[in-house]
Image (cartoon, rainbow, N blue to C red):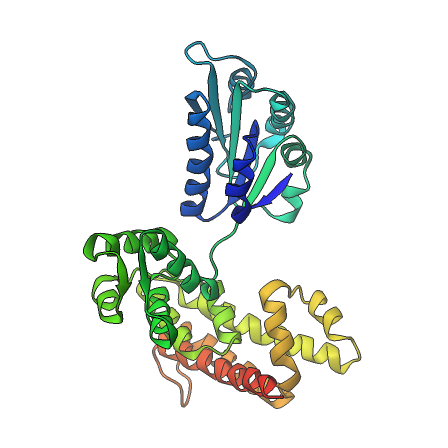
Length: 357
């Protein structure tokens, strides 16, 4: 049985199951979901808890199976937790997890909680994960995307009796807050809690948030790609500054930008040869959020635009490797800023044009 994280609270009100699997790469939300399950379990008599972490090829699966299939010596009910940080149980682990899942059926004395990182489609199609879904409840925990972050912050503030102003002023406050904590949800949670300590319940002004919330944003080079293709120039500059401050490799940032440009050119060429856009995108392995961005940008990008961007990417490739290029900054990060904003400006023009059609 699959559940969305937002459905967990309503599900638990109907009763506790004997097997839960949490998988995702957002530590705060994973911890909160696990705590929610544990808290309810304790109220129902699950007073003992054991934890097992799969580390290395020589993990003793018999201990987990014994814990899951036996009654506690000291309590009527127990919680057995299994953590697999790699997301790969291995040759011995796969049948062991299937057996563990089968043991959970009808077992009211043991609650089994399995915690996994984010899993790809192939892993989720494996027999061991299928057993977890068949005999228990699986919950995929996704990160909070940037466009959803202001609303998430507002909900967290409301839970502690605080709110921002209504209208544009409040949205400006939430956007500022989101810019300060993007990519670092655990720190965002801490900053929200800090506001509860500093200010009384009620409405928070922009000045209060600005003075209290630290800049704890952490940026992902692959999220930079989405910001560039989305035409968000201010966010792109913040992300590049943040990546530089965090010591990200210039060559990796360049690779991300140039690969997007090359992919745009390849899809454009395939369409010129008569392939439909969806087919061309699939052939270039473009999907998800990036697929939607490509669909918005490509129809208005000319061949000249793409050739100019390819030439610019080639020049920046030399700069980040220590070569000088005419009419370009000698500093690698300055050159990356220029390349990113060139692509970003073309994407911004295109998305704006599409909205006004």
